[in-house]
Image 1 (tube, rainbow, N blue to C red):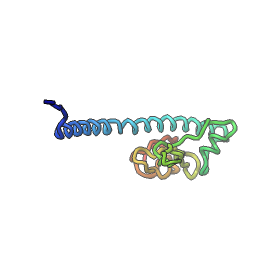
Image 2 (cartoon, rainbow, N blue to C red):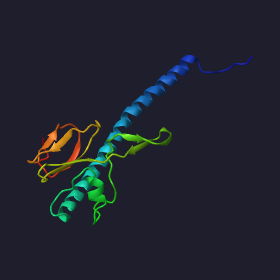
Image 3 (cartoon, helix red, strand yellow):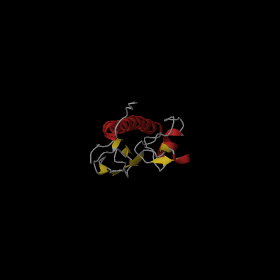
Image 4 (spheres, rainbow, N blue to C red):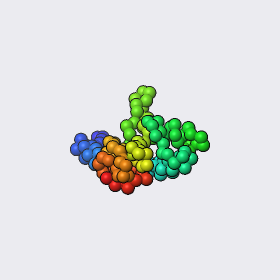
Length: 159
């Protein structure tokens, strides 16, 4: 008489259920880590951009960078070079590469100057991946909504 020992269907279902609960908890707990990492990256990049903008201001007759390609033309390819490379906002949409592989964002940080050229704001879209800052006025106050954008400015820093 052979006695075969095997798992019952109920035991297998219980194990699968427990594993799925543990995976769910792990995914929820680690999803915040990616956002936090992106926030720290953006904060560091924005500090570097602020330093570069201030350096540009000192080297260019007390004017701030301007134009749509301000980061590349004015800070990276300027003489003397201020930034070593273009910095990309980690909260901007990533691009799809070959074979559906997702590449990191290739969208630069956003930037506005006031109409009189005295104030600037450089910002990241933030965790909601939407631009809430829409500009900066001639008093140095930010325009838009105070949501979750990360920014550096020489203005008032308030809305």
